[in-house]
Amino acid sequence: MNTPNPALRESATFDRGVISEIQRAAETGIYDIRGWGAKRKLPHFDDLLFLGASMSRYPLEGYREKCDTDVVLGDRNAKFPLHLDIPITIAGMSFGALSGQAKEALGRGASEVGTSTTTGDGGMTPEERGQSKNLVYQYLPSRYGMNPDDLRKADAIEIVLGQGAKPGGGGMLLGQKITERVAGMRTLPMGVDQRSACRHPDWTGPDDLAIKIIELREITNWEKPIYIKVGATRTYYDVKLAVKAGADVVVVDGMQGGTAATQDVFIEHVGIPTLAAIPQAVQALQELGVHRSGATGRRSVQLIVSGGIRSGADVAKAMALGADAVAIGTAALIALGDNSPRYAKQYEELGSAAGFYDDFQAGRDPAGITTQDPDLSKNLDPVEGGRRLANYLRVLTMEAQTLARACGKSHLRNLEPEDLVALTVEASAMARVPLAGTTWIPGAM
Ligand SMILES: Cc1cc2nc3c(=O)[nH]c(=O)nc-3n(C[C@H](O)[C@H](O)[C@H](O)COP(=O)(O)O)c2cc1C
Image (cartoon, rainbow, N blue to C red; front, side, top):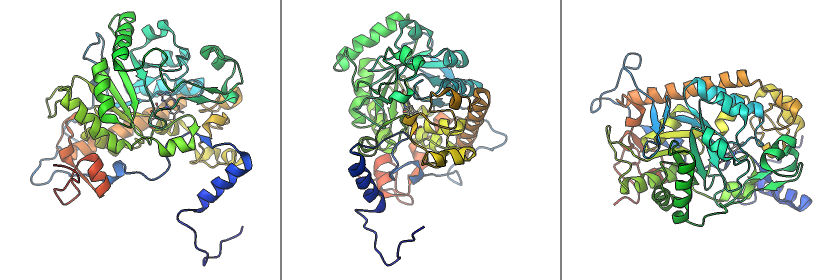
């Protein structure tokens, strides 16, 4: 291997990644498509710290005093809101992007710990419905697999306006993943690349959306909570309009949010970080009087946050900033067994490495998760995958409880911005919590 001469200076502007991308583009004439979320360094939850209790605050005993974790989603209008045991839900990921085994494993894992999972851009599979105690049905611009009977079989409906990885863009599923079953569910030809719509065909703004929401409520007998999911951009306005249109729950997905496939340029250059989006969403909800703060303040519209949630600390920080729950995508796939060192050799053969594999669109995932190949899919045992996911969700919950107790909170929902400080000026300005050791929040009046 050639070791570069240490005297050579690498350019910060044209670093080796940039050079190699220019060379790749020049060689192939095609843009780079990949899965996963933004890989650049962004202000994130790591830039926040909790102020554990000491003299001026009183902590709870970790092993003796309770810290509850349940959450109710969608009780504004729905006859049957979702009652979840933990505030960590599984984000929408399509059958097509994921194998049937992966969808089943997600349902098994989520149900074991009393939380929900979500369909995706491709319809509802019997594996997923069968194994999910609480299943949220996505209603997407593409309408792939949309079926009024499945709407009625769901426990909640999520109208997807956008994703954090690609706000303003549509989905992508390359031909190699469009097998007979996927094509049948989406009414598409087999083996042909599919680029789905970036906007819904039958409304242009919130007034039309309000009518659509009433239609959805009527066909489901006003039983199901209606969520609206937006990719984080102009979050303050989008959340206000989502509530005005009738959402019971608003899902805000930041730019670190994962995707099954889109252009790299989109993932890295569109949207705002999750950290910046939460306070904007909370401000919008508070101004509408649907997100009263304080320990007993009832929140009539709930906020779910996603995009880069990895640990119990991330969960607790998102909730302290005002989320009622979080959703996870990428981390759930890793927990199932994706990017496992067990498949290191196979990832290498694909020109990747365990921990780096992001070519979900290629459908050759040796772990059997982001594939439709029947032989590869067999590598994922849905029971074992479900067990791993349930373990991971338990760990996230225990970690979040540990932090909440240290802040003196007997319920995760009682965490508040006052429990947090920021490590950097950027994070302080975005999260609207003081820079550590000061009372200063840049930009605050
Ligand atoms: C493989 C994969 C498939 C996805 N498919 C969909 C989809 O069909 N509909 C959707 O709204 N979001 C989809 N997403 C985005 C997730 O719902 C979620 O917004 C995102 O993964 C959250 O960020 P995280 O991956 O950092 O947890 C997908 C994400 C992944 C990783």
